[in-house]
Image (tube, helix red, strand yellow):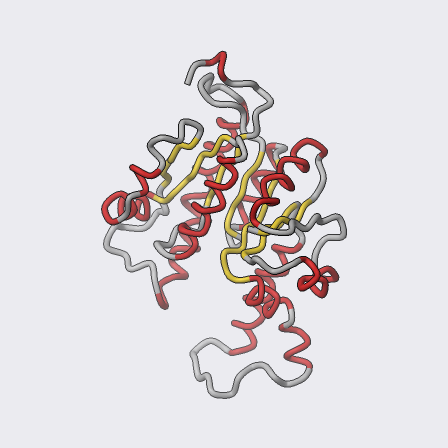
Amino acid sequence: MELDQIRATDPHVLFFPLPLQSHDVTTSLKLAELLYLANFHITFLNSEFVHNRLLRYTNVQSHFANYPRFRFKTITDGLPEHHPRAGAQMIDMFESLSCVTKPLFREMAVSAQSGLDSSWPPLTCIVADGVVNFATEIAKEIGVMAVSFRTISASAYWAYLCVPKMVESCELPFKVFNKAEPRQCRIRRGHNQHVRTTRRAGAVSNTESHPQHLCRRATSCPPKLKAGINRSTTANCINQSLGRGQKLHGMA
């Protein structure tokens, strides 16, 4: 793409889904495509492990071949190729993301935000999976908008936010579980992760529900959020917020 075809003010969004070959990447790709169709520039960052499998088993390369403002980049998740990245060993991936991927992600974000790449506009927004906390921290460090995208359903997300009340009413923890880690620890860790999402600059929920169905969530989310009505409004919400520096809550 020629330099004279790019304006420095064009919105440029960096996507970073949780590096799992599952609904996380697939759902993030759908949201990224929606923003592309709304004239955003998109950099979609995958782990090398996931991206190699997308190229091997899906049509992702041919599908986005005609999208000149959409590009893929890869980053290591720090784990060896043979690591399962699933089940009880998932914790290895989160530790590796924090130790290995985080500094590499910061370098990439700083470079993208600086505008040194003359063929691409400067970075203006980072959309990351809600459990990738360091992406939000880095967005704030470099002064770009941070948006948390929860690929789980909005109802599941709401359930996590209701955990304290469920514990108070003795509905949790479920007595049928018998794991090595105390149940309270697992519940607390999951709840804290989701609460951190609500404190971020923006949040996109995976739902098609009308905003009135999400009214009860308002007390758990930042007060300056905007709610989109459906998928077509997500880009508008993000675009307006990029221009005004407001917080938002779109729906994917």
